[in-house]
Amino acid sequence: MKSMTAGGLAIVASAAMGAAMGVATTAQAATPEEVVKTYADIALAEYQDSLATAKQLQTAIAALISAPSETTLTAAKQAWIAARAPYQQTEVYRFGNAIVDDWEGKVNAWPLDEGLIDYVNRDSYGESSDENPFYAANVIANTSLTVGGTTVDTTEITPELLGETLHEIDGVEANVATGYHAIEFLLWGQDLNGTGPGAGARPASDFDVANCTNGNCDRRGAYLQAAADLLVSDLTWMVGQWEDGGDAREAVVSDPAAGISALLTGMGSLSYGELAGERMKLGLILHDPEEEHDCFSDNTHHSHYYDALGIRNVFLGSYTRPDGTVVSGAGLKDILPEAEAAALGEALDSTVLKMQAIVDRAEGGESYDQQIGEGNAEGNATVQAAIDALVAQSKEVARAANSLNIADLAIEGSDSLDDPAKVQ
Image (tube, rainbow, N blue to C red; front, side, top):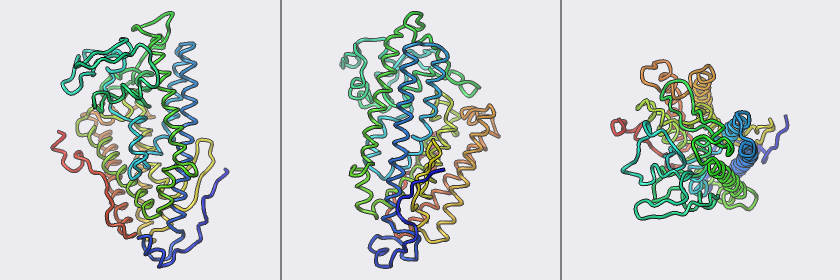
């Protein structure tokens, strides 16, 4: 196994440097400068791998459109699942890094009102929504849309149409026209099984112009290809932000104190408000499969697991790439006092184990939406154990910040955790 090491690990920060950086002044195994360099190096590697796997997905989608069959559809689905593994590990960079947070909605926004994109089962989905005039607009079936006095020409389905016109059209966040989840919906279709077994079951013939099912197979293929092309373009841009001289890298390495704060903000906010709260506790409270992150493919167990892994990566200063090589260097653990490093490390390991238990149940035949289903006591308990572990690790992140004299860390909250009565 090869490894790339970013920075040395044996330099002890002086008291003067520690005070200047706003971090603890006890003897440390690394400097804040080394930690933020590794932080940026891991971001670059994870986004590079996200881009590489998105290109593989793009190729698989082109093959599906060229020769639609259950074989090529399955290959495209497998490529989508593979692409999620490196991308989900980047999510810890979203919180605390404005460049990433401003961009993330293009590629990973959810949940989405899928009726904007394509046909849906009206019995389960409904005909309209008071909150969203484009709820059932069905871009694929229409060459123009006129809703609420707004007319959009959708004759030619292009990346520009999806990204610049349709995505979050009318200011509605649920109008997700781009990114992983739009592609997921087009590959799998709706999951109509509720909290029962089974994912979406879109037939390959939905892309077969010669033997078309459900109409508009040419436009469905065009939408899917445009979405894949746009995903590759968006990830290419983000890779550039973390390369030498890129704005995202410069923002953290030019000000190590701010970089360490961004690192901790990402760890705490993804752990608590986003993952434990919005992505897990909300769905568990409501027992609602619509609140699972990868709701069409039933891949949620993997997405949550890789989120947890990504959080631990920046603590350890180590990321294992899909080919087995390792990008490593000084991690957060190397500037924390020994007790805080040990406590946070144990909490992160515990969370990964609890996430693995969710994965094990899913791979054993009980998908995440079944695990959160009403009346499934064992499944509910497995998910709740992971939520509890995430909450516990977020508290250790806050303790770590305090030990580094970072007093203004802003960890995102969630009504699902802080005031569950609001979401019941």
